[in-house]
Image 1 (cartoon, protein in one colour):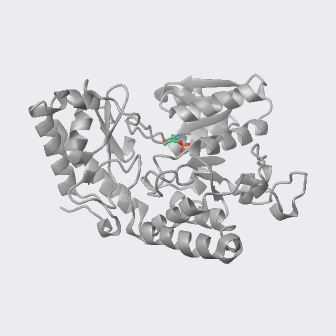
Image 2 (image 1 turned 30 degrees about the vertical axis):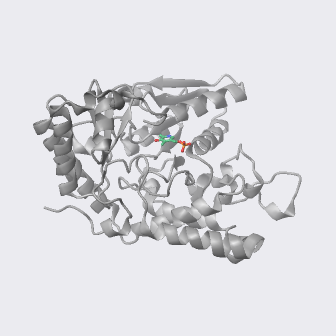
Length: 397
Ligand SMILES: *Cc1c(COP(=O)(O)O)cnc(C)c1O
């Protein structure tokens, strides 16, 4: 059975390549190049500064935010684009702590992406108010949620293993103890169905260059629950988030809308690339994506386990507990992955021994998955990975 949604033709992928790394950098949607070229030549080139009004660059971060909101199960006016995910993590965390002034604990887990933890560490140090970043094992998060916790900051899908947290359950527990719930959706947006309104978390953040295919360096997003917007103090009080940026008031006054989460000038060209990339989601039901992604990943696990007994599944076996990626561990995972990439199957590697494969049904089908498993089998069987050139570690793995 072919599980591909009829969207493959919307992407510009090199012939013969099997791309299993859309969880790290999504491929190029066909609509993007023409849009970017038009923005550069017609808008920037011809309109120059007038582009801010004529092409509505000023409204772009909120306009694109509304499109992203649709994929997060969030209402219009609750999502703002801009900056990088690291900055959005800082912004959301810095907004959360003053909301619980009598508490000092930021709770997170060892499955979180390091930058999220680093941003928390940096914030704690800058505040100098005795906050503590408490990092527990992913399985211990629920038990660690108590009334010392100001904010529970977790990444929904573990970047190494694909393990999925129970977002609704953990948010409910968080609220039971009176803490703030902050979710990082870097590996969830565009991969799994989300309903932020039903989840009820105060804040969520994520990037757009993974499953949302916005291109390298595309802007991040921040969601603020609508009733929290006016209570959210922007620690990064930039002029674009001011109530009236062009009043040039020396005193900061935040906008009374999600606009207050803007900081400075957005990358207009990259945000335009993202806006064009988001067209591939028109008419797509995230539940169809999820169903197809599970079929593809189940098939991949079955094929790999049958063909490559030396690999150990590093992701949860139950599909309901995984995001849209599958990881296998191998002692020489880095070298095996380099040989695999050389053979036209692109995945990636995360230390110490994890080979990651992302499944994006928009442009992958069951034939791709079977072919990828068969090439992986060949590489392991003839030990091609054992060539010295596959052990040279690149800057980006
Ligand atoms: C990809 C990823 C990031 C990357 O942050 P940038 O600021 O965009 O470089 C951060 N956190 C998580 C959980 C991620 O998966």
